[in-house]
Length: 170
Image (cartoon, rainbow, N blue to C red):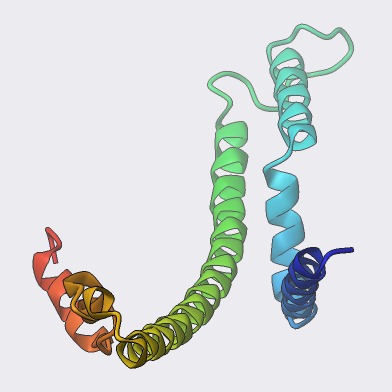
């Protein structure tokens, strides 16, 4: 296994470990909401509801002999049950989405930290390269405007403010 693939595997293992730890830290209500949300977004859920709806319509439309309709047209009981189910399912789905959004925000913060560290490291490497070029008398590289600008310390606050000022709708 090459050094590059060992390094990649190490990163993958770290990400998997973080995700597993995040899943383990969920409360019992979050676990339940996740299970309900996963089931509600599945094909078996849709098939179950289609079968149930068809059976309801056949029974309450008087199409099945021996079964008396209990919710005649316009199917008021069905409408109420579907409305209550929609409210409850929406709540579970929102709970799951909120948890996933919080996890996404944590990932975003981690990415920002890694990006800031990489920016600092790259700036320092460029400063070292310029110093080496200066020591070796490579004036054309030392005088390169872009390299000089990139080797300056980046002000994250300034970049953030400029972006906020220039983005539409902010």
